[in-house]
Length: 171
Image (cartoon, rainbow, N blue to C red; front, side, top):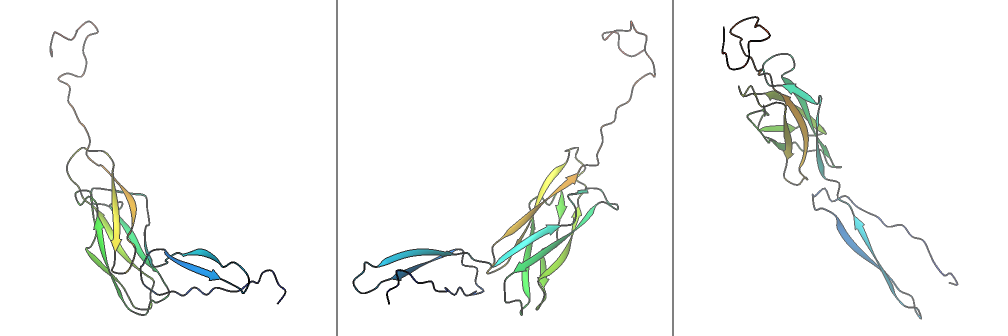
């Protein structure tokens, strides 16, 4: 009584469901006063993240042709295993296993990303590695795949006279 305002706590509960941002309307009223409303946005926290241990791999077999990816779930209920679908945006450059399981009571699982030698001189290509799971927001990370093909050429002779010219052809 006699107060113009009062502070109070608002509890926000994790429903462990991927349901995007939710809005809640909070109303206040008092006898002899005009009622008021405010809209509160509750941001969802069920999210998968994908990280990769390096920025680039080679497309040819060797020590730099693989990377380790990690998919992590961010939510409060981790008691059950979670199956995660893995997708490479360009399987002619890099491949991933189709599926990985985050064990119960764990927050993450790792997987191997392998460069693919496509035999084309196409320069460095960027591949997007995505993770999807039921009840979670999809997330992805980028990986550069470095080309290993080179351009080569041969000369008919090892030296030419300065005045040889373009129209003379090979010696």
